[in-house]
Image 1 (spheres, one colour):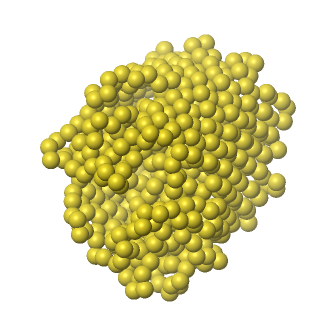
Image 2 (cartoon, rainbow, N blue to C red):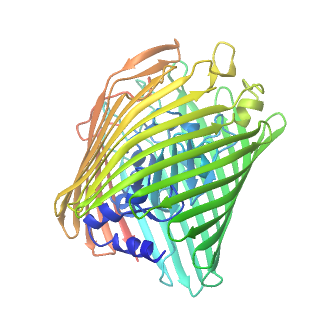
Image 3 (cartoon, rainbow, N blue to C red):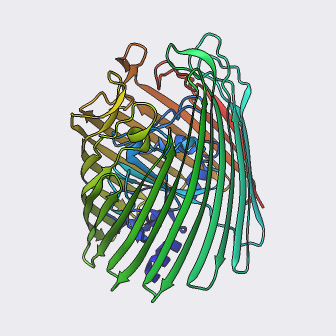
Length: 610
């Protein structure tokens, strides 16, 4: 593993080396060079997060190819729909430090991204396509692996962020300060013990959830507390315990009739987890991850209700390297989801899995695996993945050809099976098949580009039937195909251009809120050693949305948004100030029929590190 460590150290040296020898982890659980990975992994680095301070994780992720987070451009606090490669939210698996997070009390068992604070996040890796063999259920269209910040090597260090901004529509440019974010993170290392404690809060008003003449203000607030203790028992054994508590309060309006209403949604998440690792024989390591999360939510509306549930996740796996060419992961994943309805209901999944990676000396690389899903309600089901790639190296870079054939398996949620509204215990699991093929090209001239075609078939897709008021399996087969093109180029020493294009075509249902064509581009420039500026453009083509008052599909107009960002280090390595402007030309557009979207907004902040 020494050569991999050296690559990880070198990525900090130059942009050229970053492009050629960038290290990725998520698609194999080993730190492999990007040229040896059979995927086009999206990496959102610490540097990129720092250059987007003040923006939510949803706002950042939705600028990436193949990904659309519906609601990220609307009022702060709106429900976020995570769509990847034409799929729906429950087909995307979200991990925090490698551990699955999902709310078993929600309708689709998704994780509510509004509960996620950006203050404690170090980086994000996104695998697009099926990854169920390595990560289990729900990993059908993407895996979003969020890595939290490491503790400081100093005895005591602090990081503080304060930002203020406007929160207004295109039609009401009052420029009042209505959005506030604060965070503090204290961490350090005392011999073998390291620690961190972080707190963050955000508050926003100034916008109404639905478009209305009165434009009454709906408040959104979030408070999050994070704690971590890590102890290095020896050079080869470590143990970590962590905890999180997040409270969300968001006001919203009546969606039927689209009228102002004094409704509120309250949610609280409590999570505690442990992680331990054992390294042995220079080539092997044993890892244990376990987390327990409790969710409690309440709707205060014309039809008040409450939701509560919890889940236990245990993942133990052994990693071993044979002859520096074969990388193996053998593991067992256990999930127990529980939710309170008229009576308490739960189910379990117990999944043994095996994943192998072969890295040859002549450019051929193969990532393959299988997992046996053992579900307490549905019995056994096998999923598998084959991902070959071939890398042609030269003096100026490499050309990588890649392909994937993978299956995935998603069982209905507890609410869909046993809930108090529309439950159907006769539902069948959803089965997915994914094919993708493409290439990636990178040079030491600071250029990387990739193009990937994907095709996915979904059977037994679960939906809510408004005619029978019950969850049903679709009799139609959902067929999704598309293409993703990405480009990263540094034409000048201080100038960088990143761009991506996504084409998505979904057949078999209405596929609401999915743009067929989507473009994102960012042009950034280091004005000086301590001043950075960037300009962003996002385009979404025409889409359809359902008007749920008439239950008819309505065509939505395309839109393009321009934003800019400027930061300056006032004290090198210590104090940075930044200015963020979204929707610079104050464009009016629709994301969801009848709901407000953000016009031109300003956000100013400072970041202090001690």
